[in-house]
Each structure stands twice: as structure tokens, then as C-alpha cells.
Image (cartoon, rainbow, N blue to C red):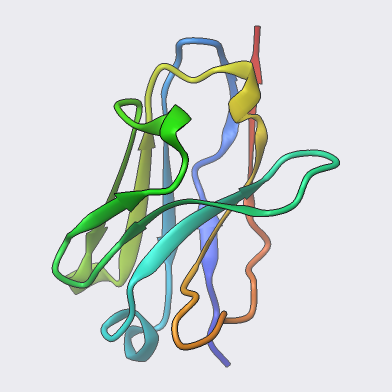
Length: 116
């Protein structure tokens, strides 16, 4: 079964940085566009950003443009989310996944908490 494993979250003060990582099985990672999603308390899970196999990126949330950078290392089957200038509203559980042609089983996510 495909397994997505997220890591790198934590507690950080506003203005700080974190780098999230997500590893996936090679058979999945090598063929899919990967994305980072987040779910804040009481809210629906939402797409943050995507990165194609070739490295093209898309940021779904305008509030993260210029602060977050998504990237991937195909040799290591890993996708990253570099988060800078963090704000309290970035507090959420962050997940990686791929929505085409279908979502994979969700991992446990990694908690990001930004204090003001």
C-alpha cells in the first residue's frame, strides 16, 4: 500500500521558518504531481501548492505566495515545503498527497503551530 510520511512540523513563533518533508513510495512518486495540503481546526482540508515531476509549481493560496516554496527531489522520492515568514493563520496539520488521477491514502500529517 502506498504510504505517505510527512515530517518537519513543530511550534514556531510568528516570522519563523519550517521545512516540511514528505516521502512516498518510488512507484507513486515518479509518476505523479505532488501537493501539500493543510487543515486548520474547524476547517476543510485545502490545497496549498503543487509541484510537477518536472518541477513546475502552482500555489493555490495567494496568502502563501512569496513565503512558501514547494520543491521535490525525485531521486529521494521526497517533496518539500519551505515555509518562511510564518503567521498564526498558517497553523494547521499539513499533509502531502497527489490528487490525479485519484487521491492516495492520507498520511498522518505533521502539525504546524505558529504562535503570535
